[in-house]
Length: 274
Image (spheres, rainbow, N blue to C red):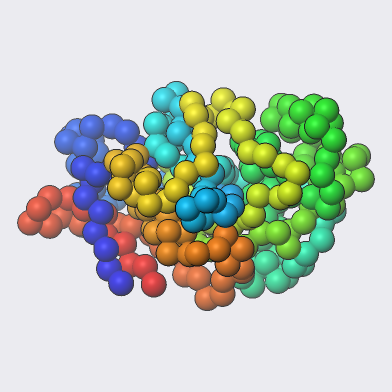
C-alpha cells in the first residue's frame, strides 16, 4: 500500500522550516537521484503497551526542544546503538540467531539491537525487562550508572545476577529515516508489555513529558506531533483489542524508507507499507 505524508504535517524529524531553501534543495536533489544521503545508524524503538479501561494504551514521550533529532515530536522510547550494546548480555528468550532471522541482521548485530531496546527502555522509561522485579533502590542507581556510561547493560545485569527477558519483546516494524534528513537511523520497532510490579516514568532529559496515551487520541488530537512511523504504528495499536496480541515476533518484515516526491499538492514523503 502506498501512502503520502505531506511535509507540512510534521513528517520530518528535522525541524527546519519546510520552505527553507537548503531543505527544498536537498529534497529536489535526492528525488532526482543526485543527492548523497547520510548513512543510517542502527537503532531500536520500543512500544511499551498495556490494557487500559478503554482499550490498549501505549507509553509515549514528548521530545525535549533541545534534542537534535525529532525535537518536540511525540515518540516511543528508543535510540541508536551504543558501543556497550555489543557487550554480551545474560538473557533468556530467543537466541541471537533467531533474532537475526527476524531482523534480517547478522546474529551479532541483532543481539546488539535487542540489547539496545532493553537498555533504552530502562534509561528512558525506568522499565527493565528482566527475570525478577529489581529492588527500587538498586534500579535508581543502576539507571544513573547506565546513563553515565559507567557500565554496559551486560555488566550491570551480571553484577546484579539478573537475566534480560528477550522473550518479553515482540518485533513489529522496521523503518529507515528518509534520505533527506541530516541525521538518519535504521530503526527496528519492538513491542513489550508493561511488566508486573514496574511502572514507566518521565525521568529522562530527552523528553519534556511522558504519558500513557490512547492511540486514537494521539492520531486525532496530536497528529501534528507525529512522524510517519509513529502514525502507522499507532494505527496498528488502535486496531488491536488486547495489548498481549501486539507482543509477537512478526516475520517477513521489510524495511520502509519514505522518499521525497513532488506532487501537484506539494512535497510529500511517499511510503510503501504492507
